[in-house]
Image (cartoon, rainbow, N blue to C red; front, side):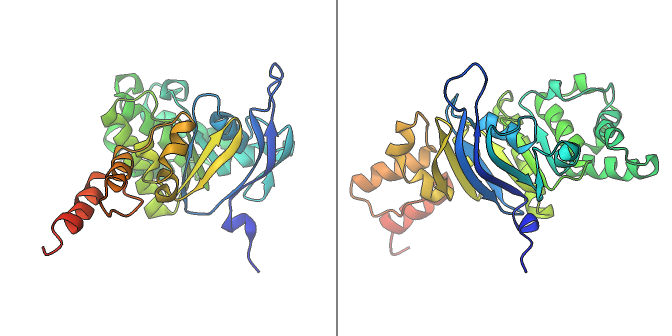
Length: 285
């Protein structure tokens, strides 16, 4: 018999959340199941509910209605809150808000100490977490001396050391420059592929969402779209109507199809565009 808690470590069932000062729900009757080992991007303009949804996934907020299950545990069960946060780790937008120690190694150890992990088990978990994000050489460094991308990788290592089933990235690249964003995205994608780490990647950068297995678009607290990047970004006009951009190659492919070129839907990057244009323009080669 299938163990749903293992197959879908994150399950959101008709969940709503309303801030006290607001008349409308920030998250409005949202349901989804996140499969183990998947990389799911959540998109939406400011105020769409995506960061509120992230906090519901980690039990920082509790649903006004509905239920959030993390590895089978109800986030509303008070005695399970720490277990929930151990299984669903979160990395926030500003790494400076998550780094608490004066040395990288000590910062990664902080979460383990809170979990009560025995001292004898800590060194191996710290080393493995730093290795996973390519920060081993900085173990003795002061966090404030690191670049933004390096700080964010330290924050990720701190969550990784706690060995969560799900990693929730709440706009974790928003404050980084393009090279820092790429650095962090590549680190998390590597963990997703090699360790089957389930990732929920909340972002407003379309090029980041384009590499996900699945894209969920929120609008006014509701699920507006849900599908593969190819399926979602083929709906260029609908995406733009929601106040979002689309990957440049997706928009270009639509324009070229409208101009008469027989290109397939789902082109999201330059290499795929070049490959498909060669097929159309140089069919004999």
